[in-house]
Image (tube, rainbow, N blue to C red; front, top):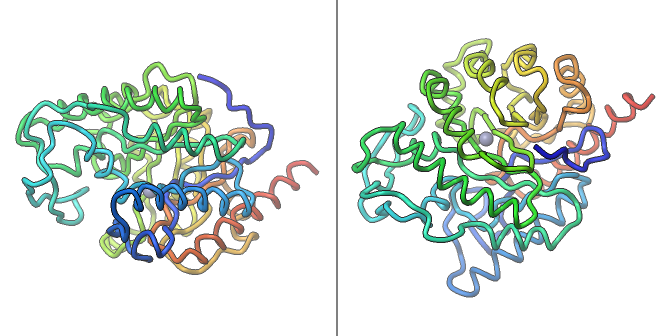
Length: 347
Ligand SMILES: [Zn+2]
């Protein structure tokens, strides 16, 4: 584990995705199809990545991402580059026990014929001297987005994906990525599987990395299936309680959580004391832009359970489906809110 060369207290970052420009993909649409093709698409993705970097930089964000400008879907785009998965052969499955989707089928042994995001990460690295973070899907969330006609075992397939993710993560590290983040919203749904083998497969995906590693566990994008599901979760969302003890004992350095406007009791964070925590202080399920003071209030509460040098202010989840102006406003609010608390800590 390398200590991130981060001199700023409360370094801000995003969970991952940002809206795409309207010339690249249909706005305010999750998993929106591309508007360009061929070489124009390749160039357009890179232009969008540069804009995403600039938006984050101008807003005052410290740890920059690519805004996921080169991918259509946070899981599927990675899987598209793997062998053993047939995208023509589709089956309807229930995603995260919540909504049905038509998904590709695992038809043979899965493998990674070549790097997936490594060139994009190198391109991001060339845009900035600030620390950069790269997001990958976690093994358990990957298997939850597929129909498996080959291994016929969720655990077996997760271990296979973990090995593949590890190959990619090591190359991302070599490309200059400072934090490799694995997105595991499935950890908030399949608690027994997460504890039995999900966290172990995640550790396998991160094995041997010397840069920092993060796991992002949220309540999902602000889409209807997720907001409807949240309504069924009751007055207190205690889901994190189920996996935190084992995550605390894991090799993963940073845990990324949803805290703003969520019903997660913040004292649950005490269960991962010692870990670094990306505290979601921006709600991605509303167009209302937080005030800096609202962000600061969430961070102050989190500071009761996270040491200041381990707190990374972040967004609850990705902002891809939001309007760009809203997302930019939220980035600025995040930076300004963190500034307030940073000054309080310095005083
Ligand atoms: Zn998320």
